[in-house]
Length: 174
Image 1 (cartoon, rainbow, N blue to C red):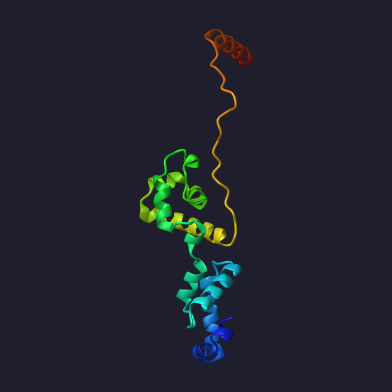
Image 2: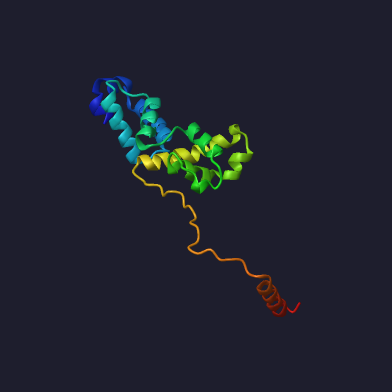
């Protein structure tokens, strides 16, 4: 796509096959974290927005996409939200389900007991994977909030508790 769209710039940048193969290896290693559909979407975006051959950095940014269009917040903002959310976590009104699922994948206890410099990179890795899935069309399930039971049982009377305790003692030979 880049050779066709940026013809003169492309051939000026990659004068020989050795240089072209080195660039391809570099781009392959750097873009390996993205799905092929994501890379194509990023390439189309770059072609639409820029009249110059993109750098690898520009291509990575294009592949990461714009999370705001999908209702996603940036990774640090999501980390702060996950750390400040009260328990029960599933009942909290999350800005996006990806924040909740990244928190679950990172382990809530780990997030609250470790310093940001330790916990944030772990959370960020999980969150960015989820963001990529969302930007590729995946729908994350909402947190599973346990519902209250249909009926609320009343406590047993003292006599009934004593009767059940006696039955258990007989079963266990105590």
